[in-house]
Length: 457
Image 1 (cartoon, one colour):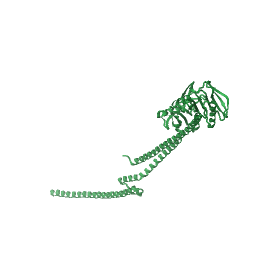
Image 2 (image 1 turned 45 degrees about the horizontal axis):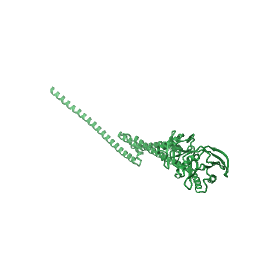
Image 3 (image 1 turned 120 degrees about the vertical axis):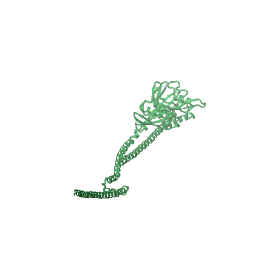
Image 4 (image 1 turned 90 degrees about the vertical axis):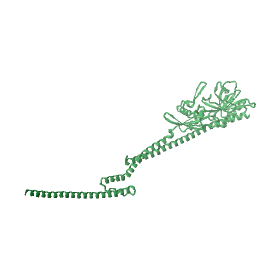
């Protein structure tokens, strides 16, 4: 069986190690949960800010579209008078300060659209002749006066454009599918509303283009640093805008190919899309707010998504991609410091524990030594004086040992004295026996001598 001198230090060391290790594990896990909570909150806050800017931008376009629609529907502006329509569009752009092109095209083939061109000028795109297949663009002064010709779009017919076709087919205000704008070659969507005459026939469509390039600018301005990546995706996963430098669509002639998030040429964005597909089955299954972790180039990333306001009637989700290390750097540094402190404290605690166990075991060792000395008959009660002065159980045991040792020593000394006396008596008796035997031998010799003398006579 192991000695208590070995067992006690081991038990103390194990208890201390377990206690310190458990405390450290709880500390690390608590910090991890705190970081996850903080990460979610920060991502959700950024998502909310980006969503607010995008929503505000889209709502502004909706309000401008509605204002123009009301003017054409209630008769305050004659939809058949293209010059009157032009003037009303121009006034609304100046009044509402919108940056997007506002336009109206009718079934007969005429169309007018105006957009800002800097702070004090505008661009007028107009198709006055319903026979001509072209649409010229003119400079327009701040007073609405037409200036020089800027360019001419060949074979432009608004009646074949996605926004016009979709509004005509739906019979209500819609967001068109995303298309490549003929003016700047960027992805664009249109808020389009059909206008009907009193008899119920389609008269034309009011539209306002929403540049998705502008949404990218909002994202770039809102993100805290270049380590944060923001993207906007439709319900089918197709990219609407992203802060990455890689293109989100390709155009070959008249064919436009848009990339899904999981097909992006930016591998980090692609991995984020794949993680969302794996966990939720796609963007169409996302709830209002979701957070997913994925790994890219050996580093953990977090992607947080948030749905746009449902009132906009757009199934779009804002996504935030951020390295987890951004949040973990300080925590990891603190954890390393904590680990060093734990190791130092553990070593110090074990040494202190060993010192304490040695201090506790010293009187026991003295008692064990006393017991051995009692056994070997060399016990000195004075050796236990320091232990006997203690007020605890060990002191009481030492006093018992002193008394018991003294008693045993006295008894042993008495027994030795008695044994010595018995030996002396035994030796004396033996001598007397020998002397007696010698006396008896002399008498017999005398008798024999006298017997021989008598026979000789």
